[in-house]
Length: 312
Picture 1 (cartoon, rainbow, N blue to C red):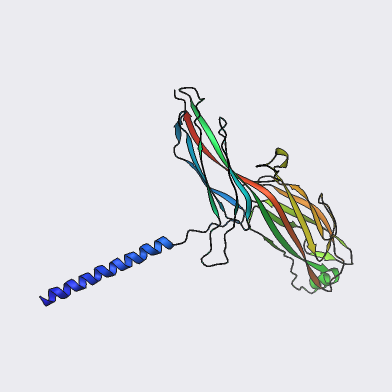
Picture 2: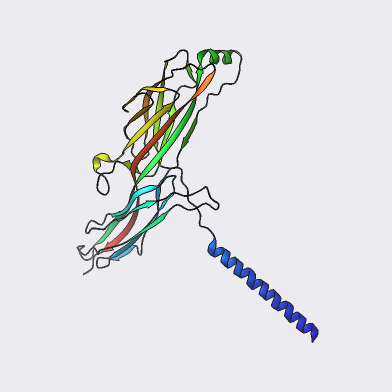
């Protein structure tokens, strides 16, 4: 009898232990962090665009849902979401919102801000009976963003460079480039290393701007969206430390800073020929820095296909 009592006690203890472990696992699952999405090439990403059904009758409203997330490196401001393609009715946009980027400085890292836009599109009642009409809806998110970048490159005196070549000494000819996470990046195309023999020598370089994101930059007007003329355009500011700009393509200004508007559509890369001067010849070599700043509008889109069937 005693043995049976002890066996029952052991069974109960095992059951209690299993329940405790199960509870801990369940609680851990509830508080586990979601995956933090980070992109070096995008700002706002449309992570979802869906409808309740693939097919609708002309008497049914179309319910759609859009989710966006800031996966870049800076805050997206004045963010709106529009539903395009429902030509038979008007669909009110969602927003504007400000969405903060992911915070990777804390542990665990924090996800970037997420917003949802849910809309019910009026039935396509004008569609004749029996007609099956494919419709492509477009979710478009438009926002204001910032991109920053920096380039560091070595400049050698001609005397030291000649000496290093003759003595077969190592020469640092590479350059460093860093861009904030987002769709607009900067790079350099130049004959390296940069060499000067006297103060004021002119050095030709090409400054490269890239649209590495999935959308298009715009200069936004006073209302929502942008006019046709502003699509693909953004304003940039380029500064130099350790030298001066003599000229820089169609960018305006000289000295340490040049600014202007550039044309950069989806997937495009442009080169701006610049001439820089160095006022002091280093004894051996020195480093000059180019910094890039830009504030711009940007939009990206995601399609959704549905079919509407005409009904009486």
